[in-house]
Amino acid sequence: MKTTTTTAPVPSALVSDAGQSTHKTPGVKTFAPARTLAPLRGDTPPVVIRRSARPNRDVTDTAARAELAFSLRLSRSSDESSSLDVQLRACRLKAEALGFDAETIAAAEANAYVDDGVSGGSALEGRKKGMARIMAARPAVVIAWKLDRFARSVREFQKLMDWADENGVRLVTSDSLLDSADKSGTGRLIATIIAAVAEWELGIITDRSEAAHEERRAQGRWISGKAPFPYVMERRDGKAYLAEDPGAFALVREQIDVLLARGRRATLAATARALPIGRQQWRNLLHSVTLRGWREFKGELVTEEDGVTPVRFGPEVIDAATYKRLQDRLKELEGGERAEREDAHQLSGMVLCSQGCKMNGGLSRRKQRLYKCKHGHGSIMAHLIEPLVYAEFRTKHGDEPLYEVTYSGGVDHSADMADLAASRERVTKAVAKVDGPALETLVAKLNEIEATYARLEAEHDPEVTETWRRTDVLLWEAWDAATEDSRRSMLADWGCTVTVYPNGHPGGRVAIDWNTTQQEADSTEYETAA
Image (cartoon, rainbow, N blue to C red):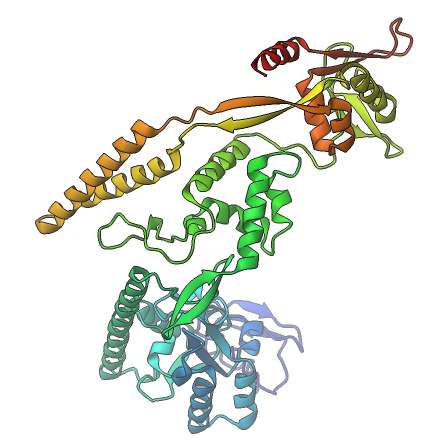
């Protein structure tokens, strides 16, 4: 906003044409509606201050407003024909042709507004780093390389032109096809036609790109970007494909085995720590069909022309049976099951207080391990209770023979049947969309799936027979050689229950019970079988 002030002395009062008197303090600028005021006396002119006709502007905004700005946009960094350097050079030459001085041009070049990796069809307000900042700063002149750098949508271009008119901003392209200062109907018409052509070109480019991507997906080729973990990208005949990264595959399979085996470390967080990806990426990988060597597009499995067979993008990390077990395990974890903590105490889940409450493992104030009632009925240090249990186990059961169990029989087709069920669903959806010869092909495929499913269902018998064999190893020998997890399992198998009483209890603080009824029955049965 420009303010014009005369250099004459400020009179003590001015009288408007309405006869009202307004006191003015000398040396202070007064903002009043612009009107013609007659001198009070002599030839001394009044102070006349004109307010800018432009709405919603203040002195600070106007002073900070830049004279010149360069607007740059690039959809893909690999497009050298329209690189940022090419655009910047053209904008600089156009600014020189418009008569801007070197200092102003250098300032605009150093503070160029850049939308890198942004489609021209996107909304102006969504281009946060470039166009959205220009619209907030409202520079006097904005130069772009070509009109499609401003927008490739007639709607967005018209929105930009309206904004420029409302804010007094001049939009210019380096090829002179657009200059919003040209208010003639012909200039606006040409600019709108060019914007419509740019939008049409964007549609052609989009269609061509989507067709190319669809062809690559049908061929099982990797389209672009970094290969997803645990794959690597390899070139065959000049085309990109996904290949196995042996080290990454082995690492993923190892952590999946840990999850399926349960135990202390069988959590998503614990298994993710061994991988070069984050926990959320690990979770997404475990849930995705990537582990089968397949891909999804827009939530649908990418299939071959028959609409049923998944396209193979790379070697599978795990087979169908393991994948099904993994999905079941993930549902268990998400349903509330939690694996034991890595620092869980040896007798966790086996210790009760005198009131029958479970005593959880924890640490004392001195960071020593203890068992504490969750309802506050008491606690006991771990080093006072665990040795007693170990000693009694060896004394009572150490001379018992160790049995080995083997599993035999059982035909589990559940994973293959799940794959066939998914294929059947895809065929059913496809049948509703086609007609003619394609329909006959799909019906034949559906019949084949139904026949295979019926055969597998008839063979499916997952019941497994357990066979126990008595060994010459005694339990105390197995105990001494066992890991902590194995010792915990041995105690649980023998029904170990420890009850902790308050100090001064007549029978002592610790009572150890063994539920050996089932063990003795099993031993008799195994002995007979042997």
